[in-house]
Figure 1 (cartoon, rainbow, N blue to C red):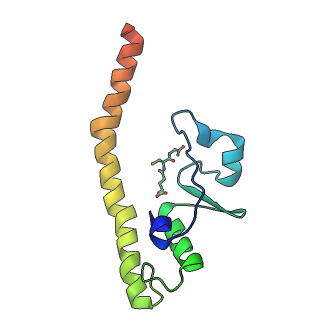
Figure 2 (figure 1 turned 120 degrees about the vertical axis):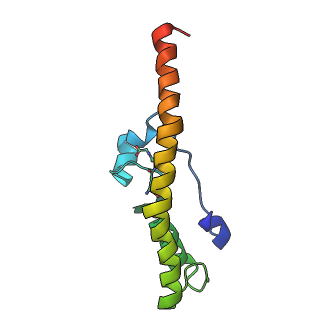
Figure 3 (figure 1 turned 180 degrees about the vertical axis):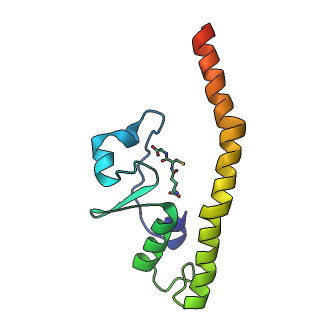
Length: 116
Ligand SMILES: N[C@@H](CCC(=O)N[C@@H](CS)C(=O)NCC(=O)O)C(=O)O
């Protein structure tokens, strides 16, 4: 989304997590933490979405207000990024795992056990 907003041309590749594509040696070479998203900027590998968006803005759109240079303005953006990773993301993940993902695996295991 940030790349698109900043007009950066990216070559997106879909990583099929359920097929375990992120655990293949070529992916682990880029990112031993095997998560998405990960970028490969001419051999510079970076993961963690908020670090990626800051990098893209710093490198390719340094004058964009999306990640301001002014320390106070940047601090306000950083505050939201930290709030997002530390509070919003954790709460959403907890909700999804408790209410949907566990149920999804439970349903699938029932199908396997009972041949449904
Ligand atoms: N804090 C990371 C979270 C990355 C993450 O948890 N990605 C999950 C999918 S939402 C993933 O790649 N899981 C597969 C794995 O870790 O093997 C970010 O914002 O980039």
